[in-house]
Length: 375
Image 1 (cartoon, one colour):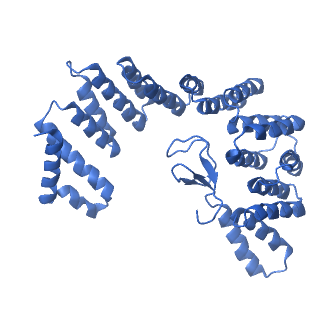
Image 2 (tube, helix red, strand yellow; image 1 turned 90 degrees about the vertical axis):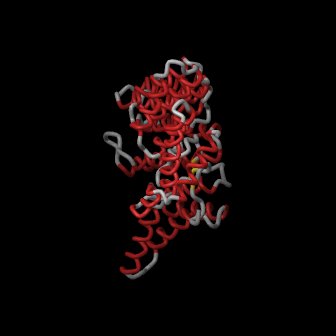
Image 3 (spheres, one colour; image 1 turned 135 degrees about the horizontal axis):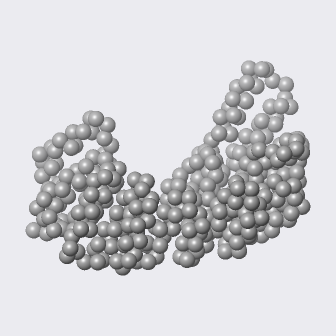
């Protein structure tokens, strides 16, 4: 009887006998978790009958990892690796899976060693290189991560972690070294939103507003149109953040507003750019101009809830309404502004903060603005 025939037989037997694992649904297990538990029991039975079945052990370890039982998953891999007669390619697979087990459980140094062993035993260099690069990134070794991603030709990731290196230099009060990192990031990937953002913010922090404006204009020629809003969102967060020493909040907003609105003037058809321009104008106290920019955004995209929300807020300040009505609308506006505005176009993840790397599917620059309220 083949492995899969045994597995099918065991699963059928479990359903026929009403296995107790399925009764745990009353204790809060989801259907997916129950399926995993059932598969673990079935594979465990196969392993008992065929103790030399390495593939079955590997599958069993993966199921333990899916359940979050990393200790058992790791033990399964170790039991495979110590076998003297195990072929190198199978041992490489065991080390590869062991690396994932350690990574999931937070033992990043051990994960790195396991992936390195898998590479030595002949595992595909690109697959292992990618996992090693990700471990360096998660552990905060941005220089090693940038080098590893660059070696693989993943320049968008390389630029991201070179930018992270620059931010570390800024934290250590080394702006010159930081600027070098940002420039290298742009060189390896000219469309790097995060590198351009960091470079503009550094110029603003130093009071070099002409440099900031020039860099902003240059960035729009390089950054992909569909992710330009990330640059604007990042600059808005910077404008709302801590002030440089001796700078007044109103002056700070005026400076940022000048950089942004001058750079956006030629781009009449981009409703998100008009929306963000309106937000900067609001912060600078230029209310009539802000309203005009929001209205331009709605001409291009009439259903855009963000611009309508801001126009409602501006109208509320101009109209004579009861205190009760005003309180209700202001509460609505405050809640609406906290909505999850960003969506990953790859996996559909919704988040209230912008992201360059999707935390769910690990796609780069896949964030999109939530244009319609029903999305």
